[in-house]
Amino acid sequence: PDVTYSETWRYRLVNGSCNSEPRNKVTVVLGAQWGDEGKGKVVDLLAMDADIVCRCQGGNNAGHTVVVDSVEYDFHLLPSGVLNQKALSFIGNGVVIHLPGLFDEAQKNLQKGKGLQGWEERLKISDRAHIVFNFHQAVDGIQEQQRQLQAGKNLGTTKKGIGPAYSSKAARNGLRVCDLVSNFSAFEEKFRVLAKHFLDMYPSLNVDIDSELQQLKVYAEKLRPLVTDGVYFMHKALNGPSKKILVEGANAALLDIDFGTYPFVTSSNCTVGGVCTGLGVPPSYVGQVYGVVKAYTTRVGVGAFPTELDNDIGSLLQSRGREFGVTTGRRRRCGWLDLILVRYAHMVNGFTAIALTKLDILDTLSEIKVGVAYFVDSEPLPNFPANMDVLTHVTVKYETLPGWCCSTEDVRCFEELPPQAQKYIRFIEDFLQILHFATVEISGNVQIGLN
Image 1 (cartoon, rainbow, N blue to C red):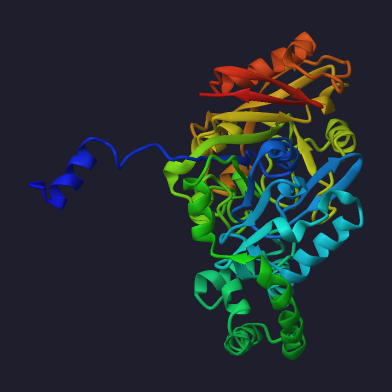
Image 2 (image 1 turned 60 degrees about the vertical axis):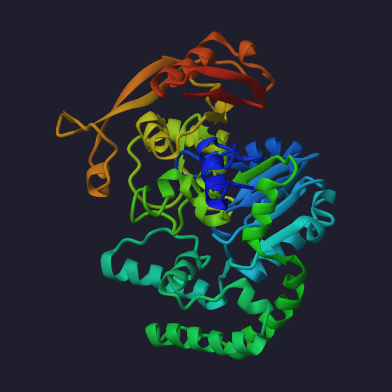
């Protein structure tokens, strides 16, 4: 009775009762190269016992392929974990959503197999997520044409409207899910203003405003049961009863708007910081961060690629790895594993483990090279460069390792790998200062722990 409220509060702070560990932490899966590393497969494996699987950034420019019971599902907006009938899937505020794309994706995957049945009952969408409109996609195409005409070089975007939608968001004239599902008259007024803004900027743009509004009115009714306050949804999940929460990153570290190979990047933060801003998750609630690394390197579209192989080996990797983009169908460029690039991704993300994928694609090679250093004009480059003109002109120093020339497709643990394959993985471990392997091997995918 003699202790004041402020003294009680001060006592609690000093004694740590207000600084307890978060009840639940999120596990994050991120791409560590230029995308297409196999994140969907890793997420699908981890999602088997997850309670919630989240998307935090990007849009339907992402593409994750998951095969379950011999059925191949292609996801672009839906989290790969939506196939887990017992888990909730959540699309966070950092994602930009093209509504026709979302519902078409669900319908197409429903026709492939039973995995997506009941998806509406287990999907939640943040009310703060921004919407990609059809005119955003049209503008994306126009901008690519203009770049080609003006500079003779485009960015190689997917033309899904992602950049223009994030531009609207940054310009503070974008429209969000909460706008669409509340007062449609107010939404219509804002939509017409936004459409006129783009029409003024791009006179060749063809927008049927009334038709798109009619379409959006239908989608508003479909969307309304899925919408939730994302901040409170995540807060409750993080601080309620014990749950396993998985975050599925889209794109990859070298496509990050801040840390990627700018300007040949996407328009969102696909490094670990995007988890906090794209879901409303405090940094202290981020737990394990898994970086997914392909055993070689691929890239879709244009941009610098120091270890690219424009020869028979590159063609072999492309054909054996079936390297075509899930979203665009474009042929992926292939090259040797670039560890300078992966080490840089680790600096930005602080990976607690790496999942190494597609090791079996290297099975037929008698020797394998790994990029370990960059040189410019015969001088070593101490860091991964910010300037893409520099990256375009680097010379790569390689270490050559022996191949194993036998199949690893049926291997299920590290000890079963051929000695040369083990040596290859140990080399990656040493270079990235990895301390130990997790003894998990599923269809050529090795998970390795790092410091």
